[in-house]
Length: 340
Image (cartoon, rainbow, N blue to C red; front, side):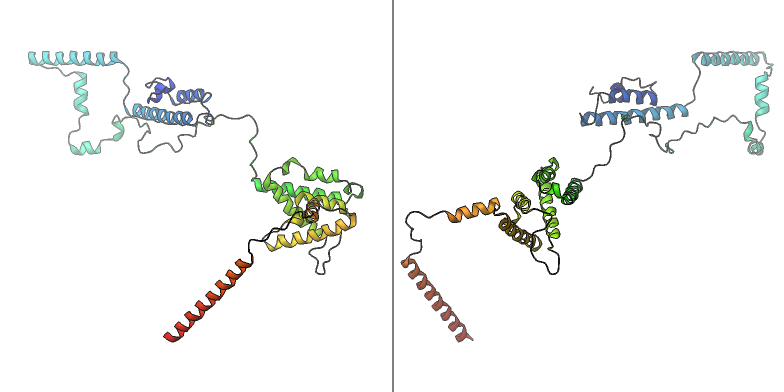
């Protein structure tokens, strides 16, 4: 419904609707208007709720400030009594001997004789309107205090706070390093490559960022484990990591073939490459990258060797241009000396 009237929107009567009626109508519409499905419709629903509650509040305050007459019969009876009293007064005046009615006598005795009596009259004898406590300048402290059930409540437990992805990745990598440390303490299991892949091939490491984090942390772990941080460090194969396993790990991450810009990563890669050289000598095998490199270098060169782009003529022209530039530089220097 596109009406701007909030009461038409909630299908309520403007004159009789209460705040409870508005809240119930809001809760009914909230079942079909979900913020995640239609944010615009939900914002419209909230604005209609605010407008309807505010208008009901204004109407109730206005009714509290306005006297409430019982019905039209009461007014009719008062009018009839006033008419009868006026007719009696006119009759007394016409006869020349007006009689004081009890109401008149009471009215005359109730009138103070002078201003002092008026000032000293007790305020308790005066009929004052009842104070309702309603005020336009004193709004409720919390108009939403009685509506805890406006939003849909879920019966399930509140969802735990989400951990940032980089902290989650770091925790997963830390857990993998701990599992590798535990694997190294089991001699019969650390020689089996399947036990290593069970850790390195986890689904949690499928992403590029977490894989790079795993590569960096595992490389640092192997460097520390093999004595890179020792003052008198010497490259030697660790006794608890088989040489074949070390080669397969390097094949997976490619540390020995990487050239990094930062000195720390570069030193670690150089250290790993020296370990791989020792492992290749110990096993008689090499990493896949080294095998490809050896295949390329061992490939025979067939056919005639084509002359390079720079022949004798090009070399002569190069010498000539170098000589010309030297002459130009000498001439410029002499001009500068002559000027000064």
